[in-house]
Length: 577
Image 1: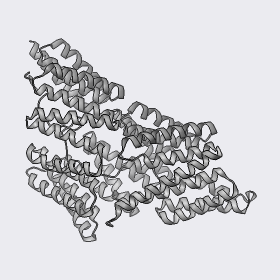
Image 2 (image 1 turned 180 degrees about the horizontal axis):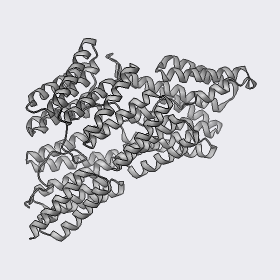
Image 3 (image 1 turned 45 degrees about the horizontal axis):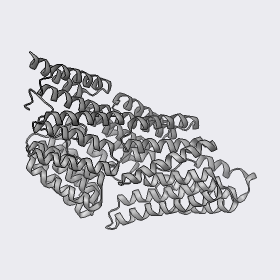
Image 4 (image 1 turned 30 degrees about the vertical axis):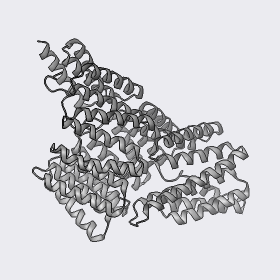
């Protein structure tokens, strides 16, 4: 089996979306930041606090709730927790189960917010503190869920189920994330039964975000639109903006990029109208990141600069200033403005070192890696900056982040096709994944190994790793990861001169992607199938599959896949002549 022309069966290092694999930095999750926080009930409880007819105790409980939510907005988690717990105790004593459920959710929100703050702590015990905060949230939600179930309080049950789902939503354990989905779906149904549209919308919002992480894109999009419809009933620009952002994120993973940008800009407008500048920063950061993912650095740069400006003016830390700076650097680098990229990254690195900001230093070093990688002749500088970034992560003791920067190091070597040097950081990252039990990241790294072994023409090893990758995906319920593993095994079979096995794997991958509603995945599988037909000299079948690929690429506005489809069609016609 000898591919003709520019074939997808040629050994190139690609990531799961089919692009040339760049250095992979860790970055804050803007979607989680936009979705997180409180239930935005401060205004509701402020009005209740002014209603003297409800009694002094209810007024005080409502006032404490509003105060607690204000503290939480300011990320003063300790004071927020104290006030929220006092509020919950008063609502419990007064027999107000609605107020009790809302106040308990607020207490749980404070634990989650504290866990997030602990992620950016420079204390050696940051990881233990993070886990303890999440455990406290889960324990409280479970305890109160039992109490509400015993009382038969549907809204209270829904509130605690939603809290449990929110706590477990970000878990590395995909089975635990599936349980979070079931809890969120049950909560949604309960809120619908009791007519609480606000919390029903919150449940829909969470379902959409979980489905995005599960690669169930069509389900995610439906849940996101449901959340937006419910949010519009509240006439609150923050709530509507958050829901609109989730719709944008669902469109992004569904390969409808123009719609993703349209909804993201709509969310940005709403956040600006509400004067919610932190949310403005998060949304601009999202826009910048999404533009870069779609190879649009010119559009990304102003969004990244505005995000950085917002976070600087707010003096907002937690990695957001550093991450926005890195996005600015990456946009400059991809625009070919290497001098500006290097200047911004170097200045930020020096400032972080002066302030003793170790986490900021890692971000700055990752930015420097991006700048060096895109600059001509600075490969060894990129390697050194990457090594410094790994060393800084190890000093912090942040193994999860170290896994990310090791993947960056692998990407640096891959960028210049130094495949063997890329194996070392990939091996280190894989060992860390096994140590911390991060199966999802292990799948990503195994995917890198498949590509590296293909590039080194060690096809049997590549196939063995792809099979291992698929097995793990099946164990953890990662359906998209499984589809990608099958697709990669098909490409490896092609390189091993096994066209029938390649065709079979390509068709299986196509079926898996179709079940997920992953149109880019479908197009990639069709690309493989068309290339195998080319190699088997079945030109009409090849053109038929390549035309299907072309239609999907146009539907998703994926220019790279459109070019690949046209190239494959041209190769098929040339070969047929």
